[in-house]
Image (cartoon, rainbow, N blue to C red; front, side, top):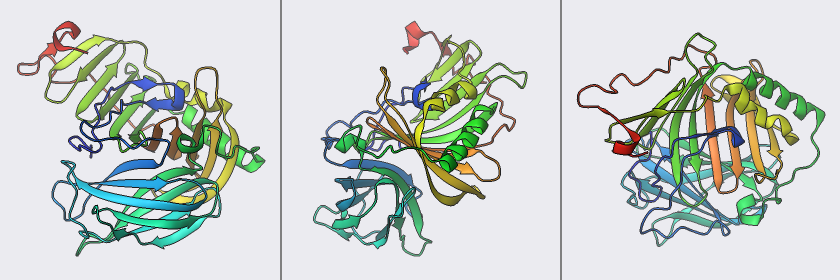
Amino acid sequence: MTLVGLRTVRAEAALALLVALGGSILALLAPPGVKAVPVATMVDLVAPAAGIGQPGGVAVRLQVQPARSGANAVVVRLTDTAGEPLPPDLAPIRIDAVGLDHAGELLNITPFVDASGAYSITGVGLGGTGWWRFNVNLYWPGQPVEQVPFYLLFPDPNVHGMEAPDTSKATDEATAVFGRGLEHLAGLHRVRWNERLGGGTGTVVVAEQAISDGSDGRPPAFSVTGAGSTLIHVGDREWLRRAGGAWIEREAGPVISPLELAQEYARAEGMRLGRVEVVDGEPCQIVTFVLPATGLQEPSWFAWWVGTESGHVRQMAMVARAHYMVRSYRDFDAPIAIVPPADAGLPGSPIASPAAGGG
């Protein structure tokens, strides 16, 4: 589900693949008429929810301040797909905070509806430095509980400085788990993933992506669909269509292979073992690490869920400068046919030239 139309999280997809950080970057824009909370004061994340029993879907907005070990204020806001607040007390909320690579845990955090209609609580004691998952549990009337996960890093580098989180020396066991995950990630020929990317100021884009290196006899290709836009890149051509528009065909550079995407992680350091959790039916060992700063980019912090049997990186979370990413991988080396759009150039769906159609 994409969050097109959410005024509090509105963003226009600038669909592109970025080698650094190993993924696509979608342009994140503060919504018009809404004053963005400065990144330096709190972490402000958004995620879609199924909104069980609620027509049109729901967005969950989580704000945590100051996002470091110790006492924190936590606020949760619910909106519909038009960005309008949902009625207070529509769904009681409970939050579970669980440390992913440290022993911190605080369950059954119960915020109360405040004067603004948000669910808020102050003085939440969260002890532990490193990665946290905040599960926002939504209790829709007459429906099973719905759990919406958020991933945070304490102390948050966007709030407390890019060198704030601990990047202590890697352990041998954690390095081995990381190495196995990296080997499988680099060895992929085809894979799909879902990505949720936010700016930490109440913005988010959700995208579906796929990549194939051409080893199956087809041209190398990748595709990205999110926020109402679709990009299909096959060989040396690509097709872009924004919501309601015509396909724009243009020349494109080479497709970046999974191996090339994985090579960025070779300089990782500070590997740290975390919990073992089940993802898509497989037990996965969490390992966290940092990509240190270079002359071209600032540091970025990662958590990987590495399958204990398959070695696949089934899930990934990342925090970097104004970027909060959660990615779920699937269809490892499954048959994936990424082809030019069938309706490109057909009556009613003309291919526009860049000069005529923009982009």
